[in-house]
Structures are given as structure tokens and as C-alpha cells.
Image (cartoon, rainbow, N blue to C red):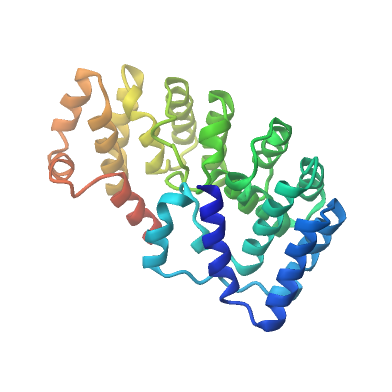
Length: 292
């Protein structure tokens, strides 16, 4: 699947390149395929933006839909030309270069922001390697939101590789830096009771400081809500914005505790919208994205 996806992405890229750009791109791939080295990868990364530019990668909706099954949740339609080329260079090198993790580490630790983003965007297409897990952890600790989002957003790597501790840290970090939760692949599947508790503590800290809570937070709380968590949900429903009330209703609908259904009956409009399919986490995410 990764090979199919990368071939598709390469097709999208190369049709945007002029003759000179295509020649340079092909030359880098030839080197990385036939005479690979860490130096060659660094040089390709370093010259990519200058040689190919930073234009958006152009992908139609129909092309994206056709390729979606092989993309594993990745969103290359949000990539730029230089990002796409760097991903292809790195994946090519990982297939031909022994100890490819060494130049990967160097690019992550010493490359500029665009190069770091490319490294983490390539994660779904790289061979499994425990040697880069620590580097991914470093990326999560960065203060650069774009680098963090390259790991957390539209990337199947965290859901597949992170234990609960690192997963929970990533979700909480997303809230701290203002990153959205809905692009996190596996958000519902990887929800857990400890994360629900952590997020409720976070919400209470925000409320105590007179600060708002993003409606998305309750998505990870709902399936585990009981006792104090239900009281937190009731508070958010009572004092929150319409979007918060919508999120609380969705969380209550997912809760197992009988008391959750009782609270939800006090939100008849939201309850009815859920029942007819007019309100779900996708529609709420779209609304929040539009309002941002």
C-alpha cells in the first residue's frame, strides 16, 4: 500500500514540474537509488526548495478520493511541491541506503523547519525502525507547531506506534499549543480512561483560570465519562457555547453511564440532531474549522 501511495503522490508531483525541474528531480532519484549516501540525501533536501519551488501540490478531489484507500489517512493534498519531493527522496533513500536512520536523525536535528516537517511527513512510508522512535518523541516536544502537526495530523504513525503514555501526551500537547484534534488519526480508537481523566483535569484548570475549553476535548472523554467527568460535561453544557453544547451532547451519546442519558435528555435539540445524523464529530469539526 505504501508503494502504491508513493507512486501516486510522485505522479501528482511530476506533472507540475517543468523540463528543467523534472531533470533535476530525476537526477536526485537516480543518485539515491544507484549510489545512495547520507551526503546525497542532505544535498537533495538542501536544494529542493530552490530547484522546485514551494507551490502547493495540486490534487483534484476525485484524484484524492480514488487514492484515499492507499494513503492510510495521509493528506498530501495539503503538501507543497518541495515537501512532496523531500518525502520521495527520503523514502527512496530508506530503501537503498544502509542505516538510513542516521541521515534521518541528522535532518531532524539539524535541518530547517521545512526539512523536519518532510522527515515526519514521510513516517507512514518509511520502514519500521525502533531507532527513530526517540526522534519522533523529540518532534512532539518541539515548540514549532508545524513540526508537531507533521507528526500528529493526518499521520498513521502515532496510532500504530505510540504507547498510551506518549499518545496521551501528544493529545494534551495539541490542546496546549492550539492544534486541532480532529486530524489525529485513530483519535477515537486510541481514546482511553487515563486520557479522559487528564483532559477533564485540563478543562478544570482552564475554567479556574477563566479560560475557554475547545469543544473537541470532550470527544476523548465521552466513552469513559462517569462520576466527576459527567459533572464536568454537565457544566460545559450549562455554561458553554453552542459548539460546546454540541460536543457535550456527542460525548454523552457515547458514554456508557446511565446518568449520561439523563443529562442528554436535557439537551433536546442536540439529541434530536444526533439521532437524525445532522450532528456528529465530522460536522462539528467542519464547523469549528470554518469558524477558525
